[in-house]
Image (cartoon, rainbow, N blue to C red):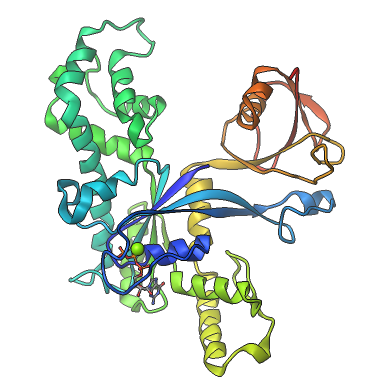
Length: 395
Ligand SMILES: Nc1nc2c(ncn2[C@@H]2O[C@H](COP(=O)(O)OP(=O)(O)OP(=O)(O)O)[C@@H](O)[C@H]2O)c(=O)[nH]1
Ligand SMILES: [Mg+2]
C-alpha cells in the first residue's frame, strides 16, 4: 500500500487530519507534542467507480464513488533543527522513511507560529528533510565514496557504481535507484569521482533527492478560524509553484462522526451533506453543522480528501485499475463485480499489473484483455486510469 506522511510543526492538526481520514481514535490535544509515537492507519483515495458507466451492479463502491486504500502516517510534531535532534527530531524524521509523499500540514490561523506568518513555515520542513537526508549520506560518505571510486564502471551507459552505492544507502529512506539517477542527472557532479564531491555538493544532492523522493503538498489547516490575511499570505506561495490546499480537519472530523452516527449523510470529499435525523440533533449541533456547511460552500469541501487524492494522483502520478477474471461480466470467479481496485504508477503495463496481483500471474503471463473493448492486449500495453483488465496466464 502507498504510504503518505502527515508532517509539520506541533499542534497544527496532524492527528486531527489523521483521525478524520482513518476514523482511528488517536490522541488530539491543544498542546504541542501530543503525539510521540507515529500513528499508522488506513485511509482512501476517492475515485469514480466504472460500474455506473458500465451499468453493472457493484457492491464495492458507494453509489459510484470508489474508495481505494492508502496508508497514512501521523508523524510527531517537528521543530526547526529537528535534524540535529531538537525536540526528539531525528527519531521523528525517521518516521518519514516509508513515506512516498508528504502532506505538510501548517496552521493557517497563525496560532502555531510566534510571528504569526504561516507562509514562513513552508520552507522549514523542506529544509529539515534535506538536512536529515544529508546527515544520512554524510555519515557514510567517506567509506562509500571510496568504494564507488575504486569500482570501475561496467559500461559507459550502464548502472554506475556511485548510483549503486547511493541506492543501497538510501533504500532505507524509501528512495530507489531511478530516483537517484534522476537526481544525479539534474546535477553536474562528476559521477566517476565521488571522492571529489564537496560537502556543498552532498547538500545539493540531498535537496534534489528530497524533491524527487519525498514530494510534498501543503495543507493549510484550521481555515475555519484563520484570518483572511493569513489565507492571502498562503495564496502567495502558489505563485512559487507550490500546491496549497485549504483544510479544516475539525470540520471533516465532525462530519465523519455525524455520518457514522447516522445523523447526516456525508462522504469524504463531498462539498455538502444532508441532515438525516433532524430530531436527534440539539440546537447547538445543528448550528455547528450549518457553520460547517457555510465553510464547505466557500472552499468546496473540507480539503482532507482533496489532499489525499492530490498526493496520490498528482504528486505520485498514480492511476486506478480494476483486474477482473470474467471480462464480460466484470467479475471475479465468484461473481463479485469489480472486486479489486489497484493503485499503480502511470506508465505501468498489463504485465506489471499481473505481477502486482500475484508473482505467479506475472511469471506465467500470456496476454491480457481490455474488458471494455474485449480486445487482447500485449504485456507491454500501458494501462490507463480506470482500465478493467483480465490477465491470462499459464498459472
Ligand atoms: N479550529 C480548528 N482547530 C483544529 C483543526 N485541526 C486541529 N485543530 C485543533 O488543534 C489542536 C491540535 O490538534 P492535533 O490534531 O492534536 O495536532 P497535532 O499536529 O497532531 O499536534 P502534535 O501531535 O502535538 O504535534 C487541537 O486542539 C485540535 O482540536 C482545525 O481544522 N480547525
Ligand atoms: Mg498529533
